[in-house]
Amino acid sequence: MTDQTHDIVDTAVAAGAFTTLVAAVTAAGLVDTLKSAGPFTVFAPSDEAFAALPAGTVEDLVKPENKDKLTAILLLHVLPGQVMAADVTGKVMDAVTAGGATVHVDGADGVTVNGAKVVTADIACTNGVIHVIDAVLLPKA
Image (cartoon, rainbow, N blue to C red; front, top):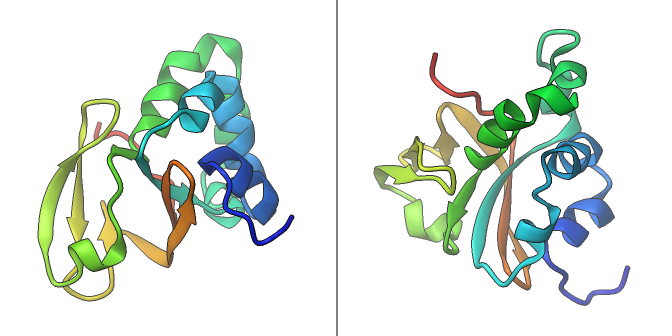
C-alpha cells in the first residue's frame, strides 16, 4: 500500500488487523455499502476484540442463516456521516447507527462506545473514518 487514502473496506484490509471484521462484512453483504460514497464513521473491532467473544460466536454469525443477525451487529458499528474524535471529546451523547439502533458515546475520559474503548482514532478514508475499538458491540438483549 502507498500513502494514498483508500475507502473504508480497503483500508481495513490493508491494516491487517481486521481480518475477522472484513470476513463478517463480506458475509453480511455490506462490502459495497462500505465502499460507497458515504461518509461513514466505523467503529472497527480488532481481531483481538472478535477473539474475546465466546468460542464459536463468530463462526455461528457468519453462517448464511444468521445473515440478518450479523448485519444488525455490524450496523451497530457504523454511523452515517463522518465523526472525528475531536467532535466527541469532552461530550456524552447517544448516536443513531446506520441500522437505526442507538449507541452511547462517551468522550469524557478518552472515548468509549457502549463501553468499548477507542484505542486508535481518526484513521482517514476516502469515504469516512475508522476508529479502532477493543470490543465487539452487541445489540441490547
